[in-house]
Length: 293
Image (cartoon, rainbow, N blue to C red; front, side, top):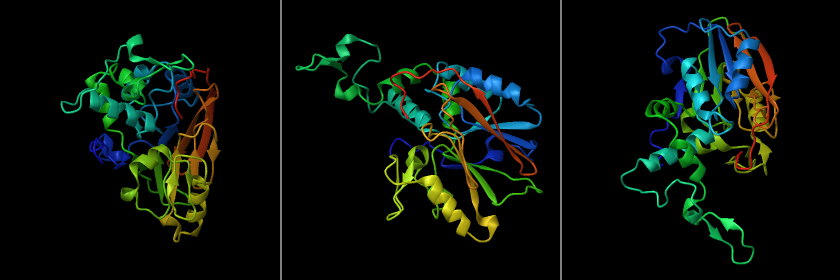
């Protein structure tokens, strides 16, 4: 797809930072919204950088008051993350800003000249060419090249290597921002839908960003229950769906507990034996009118 050639679709966690062996017996998976709750949560779970590794479920930017600080914190923690729809849109906007072939027609300055007025209501509106990615371009200008390079490494789907002795009803653990379609190989999943989907049409098996069909996690759970042997099943850990909230099932673990809306920031702690533990901290609301799903 044009403009998305830099998106890594699938990665194994161990390869992101070139570990020869997996040194971390505990993996802590976070749905991330802003910096302060992350620090509080790290303290609550007694995070130890020598034995723990953090995996974020995406959207670590554009969902709180300090996107730059969150990215710097993730880099400092040597954390992994999958790409969320907000990272994807911002990186596409950044690519457009730095393209020599496609110039952005409007400057990013918040100028009154960029708005038109509806002749009937008098309400000011953005010109069509500035709709959609104006906020993303504004955010993209704030990041350094090093921060952009870090965000560009985020794969759409990330596999957590399971150590020997790991006890689970599945043979694979995958992290993705929004969801996956059962029966489709990991490297054949649609990147856009993996970052945006919420439901699946049962008749066509086509995913949708909307909630008009069956929730994708129900479809996934049903499909995994039919897969034999158990080692061929996969557990999917995801974020993205604040409206549905914390949604932990046997084969899917939804961790978005609406931190940016004043809910909670949640972490799934997964240890070397396969034991799972959910931990949450309360968040202050940072939602504003322009926050997208």
